[in-house]
Length: 403
Image (cartoon, rainbow, N blue to C red; front, top):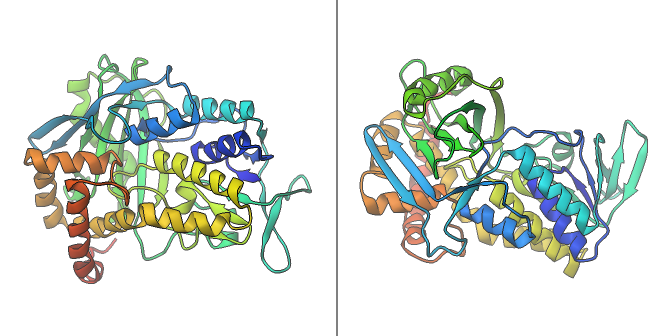
């Protein structure tokens, strides 16, 4: 097995496959210790996946719940104790998280090749048969090539695993700042953001306490908003900082804010000899921009299927991922077109935290606690909402605000 990318999805694939006895090589174009720009928040779902991988979270800062803010309304909720993933999340800067995952992959027997960018190697019939480095002139054979490249790049374009042009995507920006509240046990999400011109932004601002003297502060937005192409992320972040600086006693930014793209769909996520995991497969919740948990789960799933049937793994993987995630992620994409209309966004976000019952459902959505296997009221509500959004979706897309 050859894995392109040493982030959470790639490392999880390597750990699971190597522990199962497969020969695994992970190719990472960056150097050891590279820092991936990210919000650093880990949902209870992600914590459960890391536990399954045997990764020690002793260095992570425990998070017990979510504080949601919409205008003057605040709700501070604990992660539900009865969910199947456990009662707590965490904040763990990606430099540390990724290092621990790569170390676990190495201990499991996987080989990590740093500073090496590779592309899929194709047979005459288009089957992926390995990877090759164009700069080093080397080729490695593999029974399965795993795309764990994050936001689609050259390798994804080569295999047709690009984002669906008609579907939404997100942009986010983050940095770190010192705060005496770095030990807070709640993630904080402000759901009512305004852009420089006063318009509502479909996204949210976050304060994620890291427990190390700092907080991860950031903002994100969906491509469905009016004027998206003109959105100044740095200005949006600075405006949000002004909103929270006094309450969090924020110091100056510790580094230059860095932005990244969030793909939320994929034209293809598998083919002969290859499969995509995590962000490369479009597995990001459109309602919160989170995807680490999906990356870990999809990587482990693909590795297990590969061990059972190497040739049939890509197709089986695509079917299981579809059953588990496609419905919920489709609902999220439809919802993003809904809140791309300012008047709906303005009233809908207040509703999201307006009552305890609705806030509890919002909590499960924001915590990635719902998918095709989830029982209970929240899943039923999302199913009903999806049927309504399906009917409204063509109109919402036609009348979406010009980006």
